[in-house]
Length: 68
Image: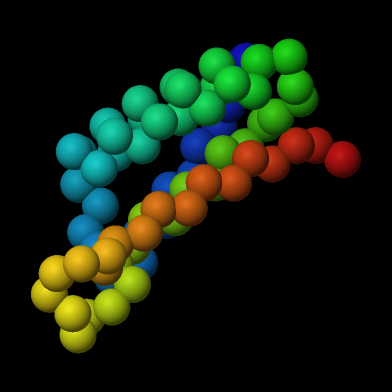
């Protein structure tokens, strides 16, 4: 399955380490989605707040899109 991956970053710099982590997660999701028609993986990674310095300040959202 040739899965296209779109990565969006919000308030965080998208570097090679983050891209490789998203790629590894995408491979795992691709294994999970085998047998299903999925053509796009949309990923948003970001920092939820600028105010807090520790705790849950980062988020990652993965969405699988299938053709209509």
